[in-house]
Length: 274
Image 1 (cartoon, rainbow, N blue to C red):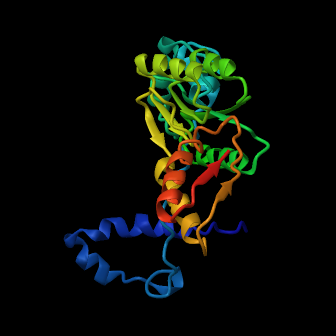
Image 2: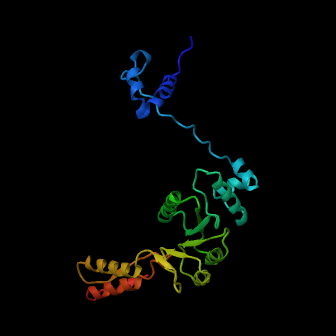
Image 3: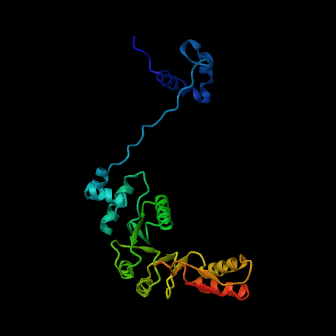
């Protein structure tokens, strides 16, 4: 004798009880009450809820057939890899939508938004940590946004200016940490004229209008001069040996106000800065 499936009794019970749900069947229910011997009534186990089979996820091949393109094109569009004509992107996205593709789809009117970050001196602790910070930020962004980090020689402003004007990718925005040099400033003004969003960090390039994110170096220099002056126990001469690397426009502006604070705070204590 074949074993009865767990849901077989439930199916038969549903069929049996269906006509009794109508009020006119009360008499029949009284004449034939549920019997525990038949697995009915209080002692019967509750029937498990019926489940519809899962809907299979559309494959790249199905999307490709619907859009009339190859599977490689579908993969590039759905994964935001770029390099596909806008008309083809629209066809692939529309085909995926029609198949209820269960994933957020890229917008048909644009590809990947590429943001370039130009940094210098990867051997230093500061810029190495800054680069890792941008890497962590990039990992949290949507797949339609890509962050490219580029390290250039700060002693070669001509190369930095060329990179600003001639990127290797189609760039939507630029984040820049570079020395304040006339060539860099001219290139940055040209980029601003082209309405490319630009953010400067660490150093504020003179003659430019783009957003600067960093400390107020002038205020920092005045505070340094004031603190050094207050630490002197008696009047006298002070020699401040401040290194000046190529990326030093961020540190050069504080020198002048620092000297003013020191000479003005302590009698007869000129600041000799080299």
